[in-house]
Structure formats: C-alpha cells, structure tokens
Length: 388
Image (cartoon, rainbow, N blue to C red):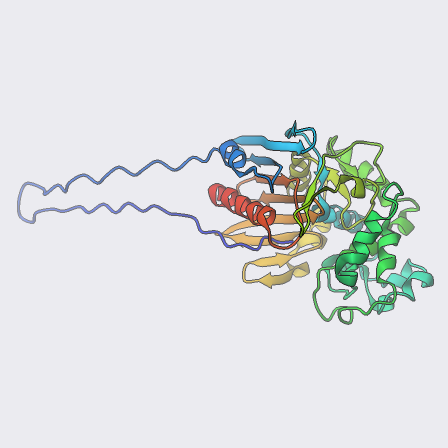
C-alpha cells in the first residue's frame, strides 16, 4: 500500500536582531543568543531493541543513505529455539513483491509480448473466465492498478476460505489458480474501470496470464531478469522456488491469545500477489534499481509503472502506480509498498532526492489493528521523520 501517514519535520530558525545607535559612534550589542542544541541522533539499534516484546518477537531494519548505513536486528527468529534474529534472515514479503510482478508485466509489454490494455480473454480460457464476473471486460492493466473490480480472494467468507486453503494439506504446493478458484461465481466489486478496490486476485490473474505468455511459470523470468542480474542471493519465489532457500518463523496471535507459527502454512504457497521471500538488503537493492537504474528498467517501463499519466490519486499527497505507491512527504518523493501476511510484516521505501533506502521486517502480523501493526507503523514514522 502507499504510505498513509503525514510527516512533519521540525525546522529550527535563529533570528538575529542587529541594533545600532543612530548618530552615535558605538553600537548596542544584544546579549548573545543561547546556543542552538545539536540535532538529536537516533540510535536505531536502541530503538528496535526497546520494541521487542511478547507480541513482537523480532525486527530487522535497514536505513541507508549516501553518507550513512545502519543495518540491525533485534529479538528472535524462532520463539521455540530462541534463535537470535540475524540481519540476513529472510521472510515472506507479501505485497511488497507486487512491484516485481508489475515490472515483469511492463517489460513484457515493452517487448511486444503482451498488451496491457487487452482483455483477459486474450490469454485465459473460458473455463476460468466464465466463473469470474465481468472478466471478459477486464484488462491486464486494470488487474495491476486495482480498477478491475475483481473480488479479493482473501475476503471470501470473511477470510475463512483463504485460511482453510492454507491449512489444507500444507505440504502440497498451491499456486495462483488455487487461490483464484476461491472467487469463482462471486460478484465483483464494480464494473471494470468504474472504481478502485485493492484486490490480490488481480495479481494472481496477472500471474496466470504471464505463465501463458511465457510458456512457463513466471518465477523463471523473475530470476533471470531480476534476482540473478542484481545479485539478490537472498531472494526467491515462495513455493515455486522453495528449493532455493528457507525463511524464518512468523507468529500470529489468535483472539484466544494462542501464538501460532505460520511458517508451515506458507512454505508451499506460490501466488503472484505475495510472490517472494527476501532480506532487507535485497529488497533495498531491487527498489533502488527500479527507480534509478535505466539499464535495469528503462524509461518506457518506468513510465508504465509510475509515470504521472498512469497514477491513481489516493489522497492529497498520495498516488498509486502499478504495484507501487508514491507519496509526497514534506516535498520529498517517496516510493513504497507495505506487505502483510500471516505472521509477517514488511515495508520497502526509497526516497528519491536523498537516495535513501529504508526496509523494515517484523516476524509478527495478525491483520487489523494490534500491537504488532501499530508498533510497525510507529517505527516507520520514526525513521522517515528522522531521515527527511
């Protein structure tokens, strides 16, 4: 999601009054002003250490500017073993990975392999389309910018259908079509192009389309185009590339107060709306390359993703592109996308004019408002306020 907080910087102004005595040879010199206090230096390690609690097992934070670099961890990656959290630990980054799916689609469009404004019946079979309301009128672009109206699969039966799917045979790989089947025969939010509603289903459908275009699972193209060229050795496509690596435990607290390790239910899920497992350093590398490196993403591709004509206004200073949010914060252009899945939270931020990368990972997350989510949001606000 795009950044949703307003941040106010504290500006210190010193006013010096110069007094002179007219017609006299001497000047009246005022009492010296008190010294301006030095800026407060935030010790990020102390900050994250102090946030660890029974509700927040572990934290990893990266803050990198051209002048400074902080990378630190706190707490544990596993409550049972009490293994200390490491800065290189990997977690499912949930919707943070949507910008990778959108980038692949924009590159394929730039290469003429697909047209983002074609409707879904260009690629998908009638056995799928006939079960999804208004699918013949939806375009690929609308899937990526959340204007297709397709129902969000994790809202079926108030989320129970999604949870049941995750818990059913967790050792079996589940892919995009398994999640899309949850919305079969369900009404849409609105007609395509007539509204905005964030929907994970749109990205799962995008994944299915790119599989058809590429003739293989789109994770292969992501590795060849993104992970390997950028040296992202701590990133892989969840489920489909489970053989590449592993991720730490994440924790969900139930309404009854039970704490559940969600890692087993997510290991074998492979979905384009929540595609990758990654580390703070790899996430920073990818987003910075996307914004700044024309050899990685050319100007046409970047315009497709977040050119002004392709943005949707979300608030006074907030807009959304394809898989990424853009906010203007105290005059700074900030690119970001948050990710939340069962047991994990992630935020990936790049501040363009100061060349600053911020990545935050928590191994907790329940959805809704709770200690984990409010602490996570508060820490992002603290870091942004300090860095802007």
